[in-house]
Picture 1 (spheres, each protein chain N blue to C red):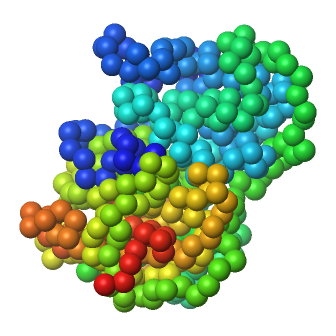
Picture 2 (picture 1 turned 30 degrees about the vertical axis):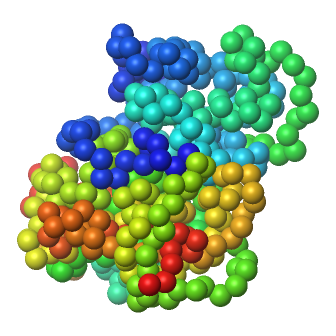
Length: 218
Length: 225
């Protein structure tokens, strides 16, 4: 889902940013279990990081807005576990396994926690990058019903390519079940006034990470 | 841990207001704890997760993987010009040469504050954050106020963190909309010439590596034990 509440850049009304003094890593035990389950399920390769994001974005906007970060992770994980048939609603309600299942080929083990590094999203390029640092580009005006990583505030805006970041898995494809479809990734920088108008804060520049299909030459 | 379990969390209390319930998904929200236990039990019984592995993940983030890693990276960059250059060129590779921080995977990018430019990192679409060098993000980083305002009015946000920059300083906000992850190298405070990397690392706060703070000055930590 693209135009939902998760796309928050530039919204008003949420109030001040409040820092919690001496904040613990996790506030409750359940938060830590939700986080760890999400991490442990990743290496099973049942879904991708973008499918995980899409599951949270598909929550009703009121649900999303009212849920804490780890509550959203819980809801997203439950949704994927159900969609992929790993668990059933009856099992979640009963709090125990009720049906036989094939065991996964691999599972995250305690010793794997020694190396909690991120996977690489680099993929073999399908061609040369169209743009280079210094090129002026315009982001597309797109409003796809599925997952995208082009935020609303940066659509149909003129910016400058600042760097080529490699050829990466394309979220708009992989989250929608259409494979990696690798695309060149660029850092594209905009002037504050381009995004926010004449009243933008002085000396402001904002960049996004833009996949090649998000931008066009001008 | 038992007393922690009973602590509520933001928004987990007071669901007497009407919206959201009609959609069903949140009707059990007050039972979040039970719901998590149920999910873990079912996934474990079916062989998808190993509870001991979950313990190990939690322990890693509560002990080894936190902003102390990023602070060591910044201190090394301040102390060693060759490392600084390597870090700005390819942060993932440079950090993995250090030996005294936990390993990092792909796509880490370091951006440097200067007298002319202040960098600040946000993820407006979710809460992407460089976990490997900073650990898990604080609640404010994941909150709607930060995600909505960091790109629109970063100076106003900075003022809420007690940071005021000269008008002529460029404020550069990096919205982490892909799998690249950003860490800010704050400016090295004055009066730290000749300091060891360990001494320097003590000045590097988590917020200074997100860009909502500055590195501490020597006189700011003078009273610390």
